[in-house]
Image (cartoon, rainbow, N blue to C red; front, top):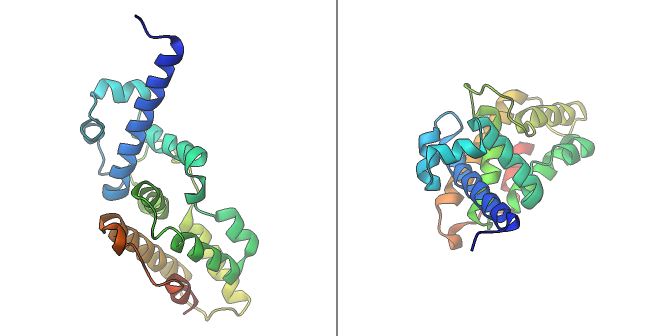
Length: 196
């Protein structure tokens, strides 16, 4: 008996989501530039043609992940607007809390967090715009505000923002590869780093 249009739509959605989530793992572990359609095809256990059926380019997969994140993993989206609204040290604390609340999370959420945290350094070869917020630019803005308000000492804000993101992505890398019981970090450690 042939499938109904609704059944076909469900199958298409499942295949598309599978490709997205398998590619998310690749982006989080290898970075955008290192991932090829061949690797996506192998990781997703589907043909190149099927990948191209759903996505024209890697950038479309990245942007599809951003849309999936908005729909199903919204809590992992980088809190740019809320942080900028809080401003200065308050915004920096909000960002630190955002990352720390996920240290016991499942791998998909950790992959989204790592992909977001490293998005500013993810590609030099992208031919289309990659959707999402810039953690680096947000951190620079907040650090400047905190210095102007006298909340933290004068520093090289770009270097400190990079170090913070390196700390976050390194921690997330460790958490992704760790066993579930080892997915912990001292609460407040990121905030202490950013305040100094």
